[in-house]
Length: 440
Image (cartoon, rainbow, N blue to C red; front, side, top):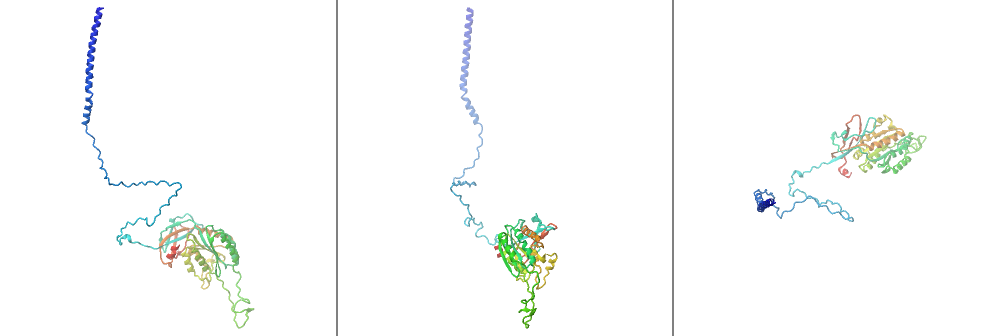
């Protein structure tokens, strides 16, 4: 037991000695840690001081205080107007708000910019009808399919359209037709009234020994139909029989009995009264009225008669000049003898002092119109529809040309670059005086 107690005491003394040594070592480590911790940040900061700094940015020097800011392109939107406040009117340009010229006041007046070339020109409008060999209207042509020559020189087409135009039509009735032919014509007049549209305007004239205006230009409606009905009553035509050249009260300065003068001392001379047919005067009156109509309309004179001319004060050349100066085309319905095939050529022969047998083809060819020669009532009524359709649905060409004296006639040649087609256009024109062109 004593041995065990001595052994335990020895172990206890040895344990205390080792514990004392361990505690002493731990105290040394703690003192060393306390001394090393403050020195570490100083070493790290000294290492960072040895790293060179990055270069500083090269900023521009500040603007002087007197420099104005640059103008901004954005414009602030104005505040919306109140609900009860009307919107302001748009600004209008006036002479005061227009910017002044950038040319200096003392600019040299001989510079090239000061020269101005003034060239007077006419704008010529040419209605064109194109048909196939069977007489049907040809549609679908383009500007490149046409060419226009004036006095043989190629012109640049500046206007081209195939749109239909409203019509201004002067219907001219021959009051000297034979009675039977006049009866047939009067039966077709209702069909003539139905061939026009509500956009057309029509005037009615008749002629015999003088010209009568039966209807001033108005819409193709009730007034036109009323004027045609009155014409049916007034126009009776001439007697188909031979003229009366003898009788008790006919011929000579005194009466006669059984073909002998009542007074034997005075010779008896039988005279046949001559009938006048003032077609030139009638077309001139219609053309003068059409010249005052709106230029945006297609202007047409439609003559229903035999084309005989006798006793007019106006000549053909004078009337044609008025037609071509005002862009008026003449169409005709040839009736009676002028509708006989082959008779037309014979009627065109002019015998001096005997008038013209049929002057209508001359007017229609020169003005770009057409003659329809029909005998029967049904054929005449169908021709009315074809005529108005053709006049309304034409190709319209326009070009500018140099202005010359109004008395100088210029020829026009319209060509279509497709074979086998029939082209109808006016043969030429007379330019209007400058003041007349400005008014139109």
